[in-house]
Amino acid sequence: MNKPISKGELSAADGAEAIRARYRRDDSPTPPVWNETLELLLAHRSIRAYLPEKIPAETLATVVAAAQSASTSSNLQVWSLVAVEDEARKSRLADLAGNQQHIRDAPLFLLWLADLSRLENIGKAQGRDGAALPYLEMFLTAAIDAGLAAQNALVALESLGFGGVYIGGIRNKPEEVAKELDLPPGVFAVFGMAVGRPDPAKAGGVRPRLGQGAVLHREQYAWNEAQREAVATYDEKFRDFQKEAGLPEQGWIRQALSRIRGPESLSGRDRLKEALRALGFALK
Image 1 (cartoon, rainbow, N blue to C red):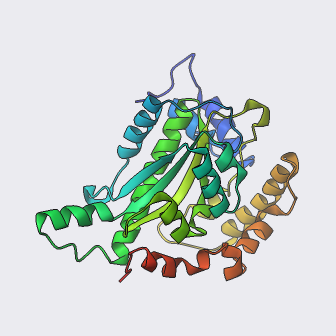
Image 2: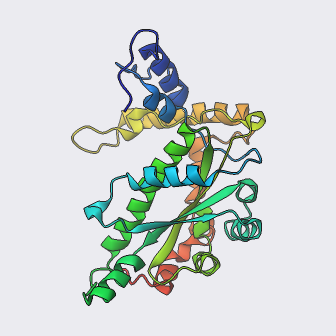
């Protein structure tokens, strides 16, 4: 457990610098205290370039323990994990996820699963009915549990000097992914995570986020001038980030709206309901 800062350690000034780097705004909040946990969280960035160093089995076991320490709804623990190191399998999964090269380059690829099959099997063995399992609520529970566990795992990896990037493209072709991983009915790959030791020669900067005026509501939700200002300012800051990173300077608004322009922008995920039903999720 991290303790509040003391003299000679991390200071609130360090925190203010880290928060300003995240928002790129002069009015970014100044933390009253700061510690190593906050420092680690605020320094997060997606890692897509890795050194050719395998992740030891003991490290993976420690990371899984951290993942299992995340909150889980009703202690159902309806998620599972598939760790992939085989080069050929990583390459096939990369193809299915939109030909993402960093999946191939990563020494380890993790598949985070919504898993209702385990409870179904336990129920059958005990002669108990699992009639609630096909309902949408249970799928949401499993997907949320997987997300909470994965974020714990990524933070644990980063604390050990590794890094990673989430791969939503694993949902592009869910039936093919299920076949590749030999998933039974009631198990769905929610997302992937490519992980490894970051290549310092290809380190990117901290990607800015929307100002808190766009996301923090008090008492009730409101779309107002503060929201609009935060979005407009962020659009400028994100364009600056794109320029620094050598990316097309289109800003955040244009990039985000292009991602929701229509079903064709979802890279095959527009048929997700159909795929889920094919994989054993009735979604009642």
